[in-house]
Length: 104
Image (tube, rainbow, N blue to C red; front, side):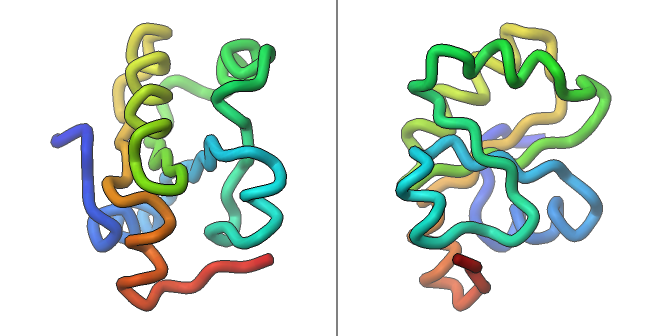
């Protein structure tokens, strides 16, 4: 499956049980995020260490503000042995533009 997916495709993956990973800063996350998402800032020194704890057999949807950091994050995850990882193109901005819910 394509590694970069749009907000609608991300919603389908999430509805099927994908882990939602928000790689923005804690401050960005607190201003609004996808319900159920886990927040690990890609620029945090412990990012790799925290991601290492996830089950590699799970499916992941990774997002940020616009899609750039999430692409970097999924490449790191692929390098770490994760197979089913997807970056949400357009980030949370497109998620909101599509009328999908965010929580604070």
